[in-house]
Image 1 (tube, rainbow, N blue to C red):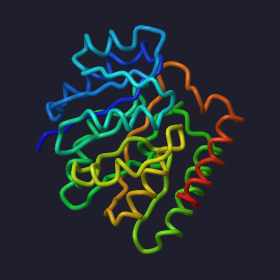
Image 2: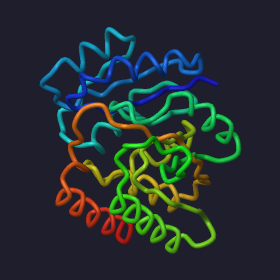
Image 3: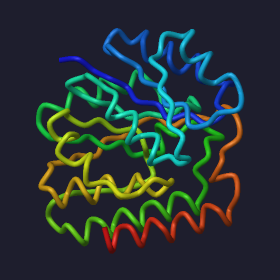
Image 4: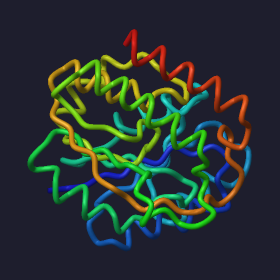
Length: 227
């Protein structure tokens, strides 16, 4: 079973090399695709030097970058991750342990024992993600159990990905819950598992600003209700 990892990146030169190398070092990853989303620093060059396949996405936004990255993969399982070193590549073993039983495995960052001290998970983010997760759970009652819609560390089987990829509409940072909703609307089976969540390397583009984070939360709620 071949595994591809997709990493969207916008000005992440501080961490991208380490992230690419660490995923490759697991021995479980056959391909790392870094999507350069209009970076103005050395992100693309460093990612390529670390062994990643680098593709360009000119439409600015997390959703656009991930959609482009998924379309560029060749693996039987596609893992979505981040360029800021907040996720532990060793957790990929957890996703692979469950992927035979479901179509998509979702990570949750809300397990206290796996949350690194100082990681960006304050009360607003914790309860906001939990609230929106429960909205999805109510909408698809009996189909899923969720606690963290904002966790972008997840894995999906290629047939399932190809089934839902053309149905995405979101290009921004609220893509994460849209992917879950679209998956459930199309009958995909999901399971949520705990993952490590670490201190970010570099400056967050969203969660460092409470107003931006609040507006993102409203977009997520709208997506959950209308997608």
